[in-house]
Length: 175
Figure 1 (spheres, rainbow, N blue to C red):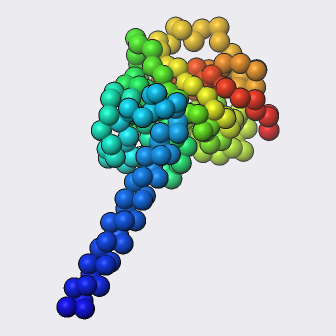
Figure 2: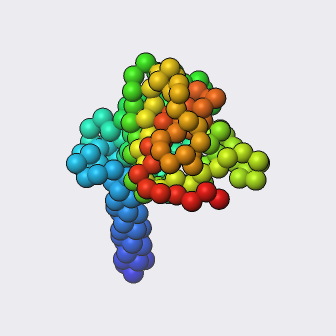
């Protein structure tokens, strides 16, 4: 009897812990965009499991292509397709415009390549605060600077299939 009670208590603690972890992930994912959008979005964990069903927007508690990342983002279907392609190392092309919100900011990333891992590689690296990302046909990127410190929007990952426009919403300091 005592073993059964202890087992039941242990299972309850595990269930509560899992529920608290899931609630924290949902709250973090929702913080990526304004609540008009994120409160109705589907919440997807970084492993692809659905934490909450919602509309066609997908909010995540971290970036799935960066192991252990906790920078939340909310993506429309076009951005979700870009992330899936990037995670698999597959090409990506679109004739539509897609949007992604990262209102909690991002990790330090290479402005040249999503695959870069060494901030001391001589390339330009940037840690962006709150921002919106826009992806679309490559032709729409023509004439937009790829300098993340130009004071306005810029192209990230310019020479890759995952090129997109970064729209910073806050100031940043050049390292």
